[in-house]
Image (cartoon, rainbow over all chains, first blue to last red; front, side, top):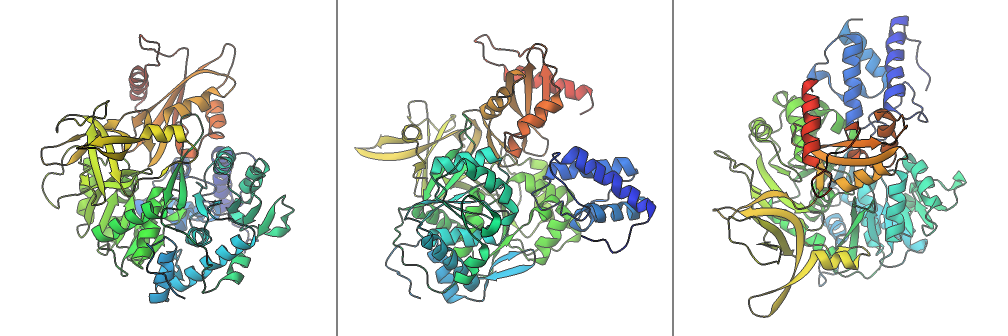
Length: 91
Length: 535
């Protein structure tokens, strides 16, 4: 998947930190995941892993995810999650 | 297309009939897409033709390994129309479990999809009996023959294949986990499934206008209601995708958008929806029935969601994969709910009996094992005559009438008002988020790991109405295994829901005077430890 444009450096950093957590903590080593791969297909993560991901994001970027933000559009893949984190955490 | 009305209704005939009467009506909604009854019937016929053309014999087992998508009902009705026996497999099963189910049922065909190619490929290495796979591309260099889904669509057509099936023929085999690691395989006939379906359609007054949500995976008995009861009423099944189920606020807006009228799930899913679904911002007045089963519904959560969905009636249904729903209790719209919540009375097609260890009825108010007799009860565990003799017991009642009852293994009591109340499981089977787990299975998986010498698993309440599994292991001398290593290793053996949420490494296990692992002592010890950590 080719990105339309390269994300700005801050965005890239947010994305890298999320991606690193997903790869290191949530997936088995042999699974590879891309920034636009569907995390919510049910085949990669289960609901517990998604909750861990949310907890990580809150702690790492020091903000509280509002219940109304807990939606597919914000968690579908690492790219949209990083976007959301930037908007919501004011980074 | 003609429908033989002189024969009893068969599961796959329901969609032929719905397609004939209401061809344009949506049978399935999933991710915003519609499958009409005509399309569903045509595709099911296409799959049936592909299966027959690749040598499917009558009553041969066809395993189905699919995610939550519109291929599921095509597989269900296609296999049945071809005269096969459906074996839906949990798509989250590890390869070993898939292999065990394929081998135990002697499946000759498998219906799957490209997303599951890796599991299929690995599982079939050990299952040479499976000669045909539908749903994978043929040019993959796979060691078995494949027909892609595009062939099924090319073969789609109006005319169902002419395969004789009677109501007492097996329709599907559902699996649970088993204590020795071998899954229990529960066999239902067209008649036992249809009996449940007809009861459900009548009791909940299902019509073509209804839209039933499908929360659970296709291998569970919940899906029996979601798909087959909907088809019987020519209603619509709304398949909830994993993404929606992981995001309660998305789920609630989906329910609003799809105008879902009937919901059926374990309480856990409703608790999540109630706590995190933003229900106050959604218009969910289309929901008229909420059915729940499988676990205890904590009263505070139940009362809250009843307030959040004031237009809905709530129904506590009880049963197991072996019996389908056999008792039910519609909750009063106001006043006391009863604590614990009753499991109610026998369905109109079932009879219940509470007995002692010698199968003699106990007086009302006393605790005994629940026996069930009815047309929804399974025909037996696949390939296990000995276990069938133990659970399908013959009992002589007034006069010389000999009747067969299913032993549920559940301890219940009859209240003054005639309602049944669940007391406890008679054995060590527990439910985790609606999935049945046997603690011995968890223990045997832990014990299969090299460094583990002793293991004990037990269930603790997770605070949201479900149970979590905790385990304690004793590692061998010199084995420097960490909890993380053990957790990761056991995660490769067990299905996700059976993997312990907490694993503690101890030096020894507390035991009762008879030498059994003292689970109560362990539970108390670990709970105390968690409490100190503020957990």
